[in-house]
Structures are given as C-alpha cells and as structure tokens.
Length: 550
Image (tube, rainbow, N blue to C red):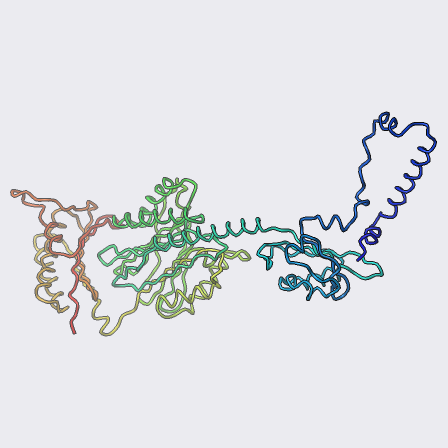
C-alpha cells in the first residue's frame, strides 16, 4: 500500500495541496524582490508562525506512532497491507499480502472476519467491544471501510486497548456477584429451614431468587403453629433489593412470629407490624398477608397489607380469589386494617404467593393472577408438586428478573382409618351447679369412645374439669366445651362470653382460687388463651398422644 498516494486521495487533499503550492510560489516571488530581508520580515509581522497542516504529515509515520493497534486489509479476501508498530509489538510481525485469516490469526480467533465483510459490504464502520486477545489484554475493535486505488475496497482495523476498563468492569461484576451471594445466603438463612407441619394441614413452600442480573429481594414466608389446632400462615415482600431488603425481611419475620404468639386476630398483627416497619426503616415498605386457619371453623381468616389475593381451590375444582379487605403496605402508617375470611374446608387447597410469580412487564397484573388461577385448577398432587407446577406454569426460570415465593396448604379430606384419627365433640354449657359434673361426664364418655389409655383419659377429664370450673367462675354465658383429637394430640377448649384472659399465677396457701390454670399448665403439654372475634375468649390445652409402636 502506497500511503503517500492513499493520503492524496482523501477528500480535499488535492485542493489543499494546490493551494499550498500557489502560496509557496507567491511567497518566493515576493522574497526575490529583496524589499525586506527575511529576518526583518519576521520581526515586523504580528502573525504567529505557520503550523504544519495535517495533510503535510506522512500517514505511515502517524500510524506507526499511534498507541492503538492499526491494520489495513484490502480486497475481497482481506489481504494484509499494513500493521503499525503497536500491532507488531502486541502480536509480532505479520506478513503482508496474505489473507487476514492467515496473516492475522488473532483477529480470526476473536471472530473479526465477519465484521470485516460487513464493513466492506455496507461501507459503514463496525465495532466489536471489549474482547480479550491472545496477548492477555482487552481491545475494542473498529473496522472502517476506506477507498483504495483501482476501485478495490479496503478496511482499516483500529484496536483500542481497554484492558483497564475491562478489568475494572470485571472487578465490579465480581463485587456484585459476591454481594448477591451474600444476600442470597442471608435470605435463605432467614427463611424457615423446615416448615412446621400442623396436624390438620399439609404445607409446602418454595423460594427462588432472581437471576444474576437481578439483586435479591425481600420475599419471605412462614408457618406458625398457634396451639389449640390453629395455624398461622404469612407471606410478604419487602420492596427493595440486596442485603438491606433481606435484613429488613428477617426483622419483620421475627416480629411476626412474636406477635403470632399473642394469638391476636390477623388485622391486629398487621397493625403492630405496620408501626414496627416504619421504625425499622422509614424508607422501605413491605407487603404482607397474615392468615389463620382453624379446623373447627373450616375457614381461613386473613388480613392483607397491600399484598396479592389468596387463591383457594375447593374440592370441586372451583378457584376463588380472596377479595377485600386489604390495606396499604406495611410502613405507610395511618391505616386501620381489617380481617376477612374465605372458606377452606376439607379437600381445599390455598396458595399464597409474591408478585414475582404473576407480575410481567408486558402484561397487566390481573392477567397474571388470572393465569395463576387457571394453572391452579389443573395443579393436583401434594403441596410440593403443586408449588413446582405453579412455578413452571408461570414461566419462572433461573434468570427470572424477580424473587418468587410460593406457599401452598391443603386441608385434606380424611376418610376411613385416617378419618378415625380426627374426631370432634362439643357440648353447650348452660351454667349452674350441674355444668361441671355434666362436662366431666361428657369428657369421660368421649375419651373412652376414642379409646384413649387410662392415664391420658384421666388427665383429659381433670383438665376439662378445671377449664370448665374456671369459665363458670370468671366467665359469662354462652359457654361451650369442645374436644378434638388428631393423629398427634388431644385438644380441650372452653369458650365463654367474657374477654378477660386468664393468667397463670402462684396461689398462696390460704387462697381458695387461682390453682385451676396452674394445674392445667402442669399436666398438659401446652395451654393458652385468646379473644374470640365475636367477643369473649377461648382457653385451651393440649396433650401430645403417645406414638403407636409396631
């Protein structure tokens, strides 16, 4: 390649060269007149000394001194015409006249050959960003078409060393990966490692963090056994990403478990959480739904703080969406939450989930929920199988752009031998002196029919007597005794119309009362009390049944 001729063919080069020649001749003629010596002329003029024009610079000398890598190829097979000193220093001397695929193997290995073809055909530059070359450094390659003599096309390859930028970007990506791994580890450690399995429900859950391009969020779920056969279920989502969102999630989950032990109605639990969320971080909010299942009621009582609706499929396959009431997310304050309910009888399946399962950028949120409803209709099997099917049907993959948490619970319909292990018996207590003996006789007959061993039978009758006596002395009508057995425990519960909760206290030797709850707490595995929604209270205790031996 003749760089002098190539330079002369650049646009405007010939015109500027002619102008310089004319200027040189004129200046020479004027100096030949001898009117002013050259040295004197330099002193008298105020004009700056002339600056060499770009056109006067030899192209090869310029390219040889450029720190970037430069190569020139021409013709349909891109034969090498020139490489500059920087290119030679990086990859060694290259034979000219050979096709680029052979003369420039480093470009071939980087996949630059198609780029040369595209630049030559289109007449426009093409760029390949940040590729690591065999010399260990990273370059950004730009292929620019240039006109050759004789109408033959040529392509100028210009490679800029971006190693520092590439290494900085890689360090940033590594740092982000470490932060994400830390957040994922923290997130998973804060989630329940093993779900509690209540007597009356079958429960499974799944959590999948977002893909590598999405920071981990604050999705969480939990299952809390309240005692007396009741179970609390919670699922939530902290708005935010990274370690901070996971940390806030962990604090909220711990608080939910603490408030659940108070056995409060769902809306009161959310009310407490709302104030706590604002104290934890006023700049972060969270959505949450808290639900309580009571097998005796056959319903799921819930309260929602800006969360997505619970879906319930009954034993006929019909899916129902839990509607209002719902309130704003936790941390916003100034809202009085309310509780609602949805049927959850035997044979029903309920699904609690976060927005990552149903929210898509290209469709409305309601459409995502409707798609989940359709998927739930056909999703059968165990809770874990249903979890997996719902996640697959929603198109959630490893590179999903958001966290996904799903909690599935089933209230199985038990029949046959399994059904014999789950029994209920209730007695309305009308008050009066005959109520206590009547309750003891009822409990004795029921426990005998359930074939409990004598020691457990006697403890159950004693606990019934103490709970009924406590209700008769401190409660008000209506009063009711309920006995329930599962495959794992015996539950005794007495309800009345007074909302004053009993507490365990130490009775002095001269006291005539105050020993009933202490006796119950001593002989039972667990005991507790709660206020009932319609006013009044329920006091319960439970005995763990001995495991059957083969």
